[in-house]
Image (cartoon, rainbow, N blue to C red; front, top):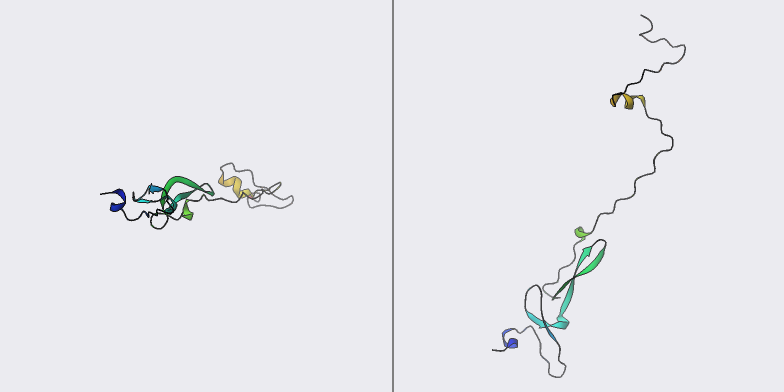
Length: 110
């Protein structure tokens, strides 16, 4: 039995001969023109994987989830920030309470 007799996927034309190749995924003998280069996302671009596969049955569509996630840059910091007093208390370095001049607090009245 010949190679082509066992696999009808490869077409033979005596007037216009074509090269044969084997699909890297299914292993069937096909015409080289029937095979396509498999691609995959590497970074933000599609890159060939090096596999030649059948374009009608074995070719996978590259999935968008394989693309990297690009996060936006951090926002610009506020110039000359003024944190609240509660931020110092929660950090464990409490500063003395600030009082306005001429205002009496409950601790001063005792």
